[in-house]
Picture (cartoon, rainbow, N blue to C red):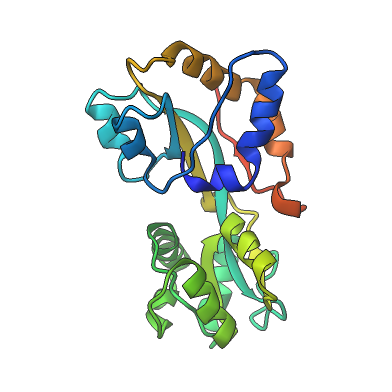
Length: 237
């Protein structure tokens, strides 16, 4: 699976609950390229962001069953705790408009997710130019956070990796805008076809999308945060 569900503690929590009704032992392996591990015959199920490179090809190559939506983590607009632009708690669109109308610095986080959100919010807000156009640096992940720290700038990143970053540093940045569905980053599972433990993987997948399990996902608060950062997406409708 991709790294976020692992280091956030979500999968360990779900596995503990699954132990109460099954004697199947579950082993997790976190990777930025989980489909490669499955292709090598080292996994029975892959969990990744639905749009992550590799998911479509893995399924269309006949190696994995059709993806099942499980849950979503989320991105956020992050900026100085003092929030000079005054965007804290706004919707994503209103925050973007306010930032675009201000002269506050912005760091473009060079990742597909933040790039998409910048492009979408720019188009939706009707601003004159995307916020990324005012970025003077090219950086991603922790390096983008460090640049934003130096400039006391705003930027877009995953809420969970930022919380992990903030626990490792004495940051003057904070999550300012998060409660907006556009920030949700959906993850899905694909059970590996013909794997040794395919039936057990299917059973665990069915457990993950049960209503009571989906409620546990919504209630989970990762890494000492009081924010809801995992959202249920395993819907049967």
